[in-house]
Image 1 (cartoon, helix red, strand yellow):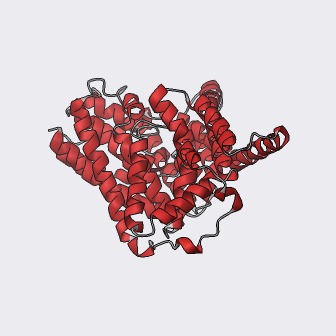
Image 2: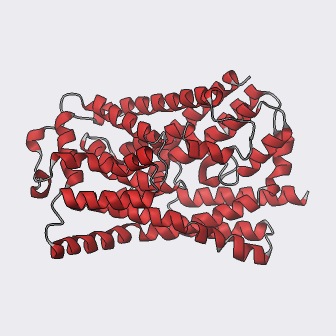
Image 3: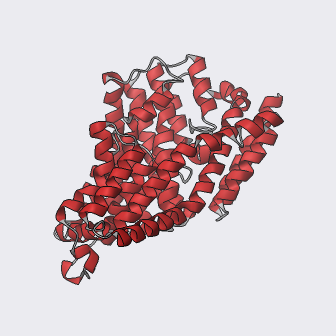
Length: 423
């Protein structure tokens, strides 16, 4: 009974957090308050909380922070050396005749890249070049960002980094033909929704008149070979399995070299110092926000047992009923909620796995879908979504209102698909 009461209190504070963010509250402060509240309400012991909620998660996240810093630096170098602007100008010219097709192709290419790539660093490297192109085609900021992040989210259905994490709950699920048939089908469904999303906003997409483009001196001098450099970190990872930081360091060096910014030691040093300073300034608030998020996530994982009593009593035995229920409730994956497996939803995954009511492939998909199509694709608590929204200075409420309905539709379709494919 106590666990149920505590579970209800945790859910109430969770709802309060959502309301706080939706009303424009500071999400960084919200994460910290939620970490504190869930620690107290969940009865996490003092020493455990100090070590495993407010210290260890932040320290363990340090390696990711380093990738974010180098990724941000790479993005700033692309901008300040003129490469990002040059590619944008060339793409505008290419897209003059068929801007809607160009918009869709950008999203498809983004998804292709992230079938294997993963992480904030890769997103930053791609975002700094592709989002300006989407904006140049006339897409409003909220539409461009939503299309971009949903295109990143779609391939997470087959990204091995994501799949391996969930296999901890469902060890019988094998990353092979049986699952990948569903995974690529689910990816295709989400991309179809992205295309529909773009077509709905097609009236805002326009032909860019290359004659009206003001060519910056720095972009006009950028060698054509430099246009491939934004994907260099991704290429080094896919082709040679390099870790993000050395891949980004090599890419930064090549950008500086090919654009002629290493001819003078003094000017090179000035540019390096300038871009480093600006890059860290760009993400300083984000870093603290992400560290608070790791604390909240750690508290959520420790409180998962408090949800077990509630979930055990309401889990249906029919795959179709569960698919429909999870589809209707898919927005509960927002803000690391009860359907977000990398947050409070780890309780849901544990309970579903323990019941033994269903084929493990189905339960795997049932818990994966809200996590991918809602949390990863449309939620502000996903680290790269947070970075993109902060970097582009988009209002959080507008971001959520724009993307969540389409993520919700995708979730319903992919859950029903899972019920059919994994009977």
